[in-house]
Length: 323
Ligand SMILES: C[C@H]1O[C@H](OP(=O)(O)OP(=O)(O)OC[C@H]2O[C@@H](n3cnc4c(=O)[nH]c(N)nc43)[C@H](O)[C@@H]2O)[C@@H](O)[C@@H](O)C1=O
Image (cartoon, rainbow, N blue to C red; front, side):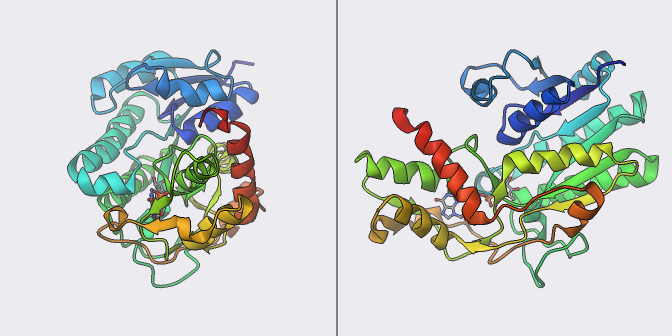
């Protein structure tokens, strides 16, 4: 049987690396698109021991001629679109660049799929941030969208672009609406990774305190290596659809900090609020209902947020000699 080919945009990010590992284990030929090569952006693939097994190609997703050439040449069966400006915080400083990249890249890929091969299956990384100003919990696939950041606005536009191409051209496009999901490979600019890494630095005497922004909000956190399984499952379904991928639980950010501090015997007063880290707008509380993904995809997820934090803390401690 011919080996299946998957193309992953954003392969050097947290989700890209774990998804590449999963697909390699399923005997796919995995081709990743990168903007450019440098050793630091390949760190996640190296950490998972798959740097030599994936094939990397450079591509500017804003240039449709490059996208066309690559898809024509690679002939993928599945495309996983994980490339994005994914920082909500940065999007307040760079709204135009965020919107431009996160929306035009989708149009370019979907136009090429429409022109070249309508049988290619496409996965889009949508985000729980799209729901923003929540008026009813838990969030379901039918909840009203009310984005609260340029990032979230770009993700809403991209999400509806996908729905438009699916409905108008009968393409196999599924959107995974992922809530916050973490792993060892998360960049340290994101909250949970920062809390764990900085807490370990405090125990080693390398940092005096943990400085954070608004920690009185609540979020639904999950474990990224399990979330990428749902992406794969979506593209194996006969019919495409959109799915919430979440743990179904909520926790305040303050609780996360104190849980990690208590594990490492750090006094709570070493958590300090820095007003500079507040965002212009913030989601107060958010958690989702993952029943559709569990029922239709047979996605199995039963980790509590505390089990996830334990996994993350242990892996960080094992790798913390260099901190
Ligand atoms: C679903 C969604 O998930 C991620 O976006 P995010 O939620 O912005 O992720 P984060 O880890 O930066 O913030 C989580 C929360 O933590 C608060 N917070 C407080 N103090 C600090 C702080 O010091 N640093 C950071 N980064 N956050 C802080 C911050 O204000 C926010 O309420 C991306 O994957 C995104 O692509 C995506 O789609």
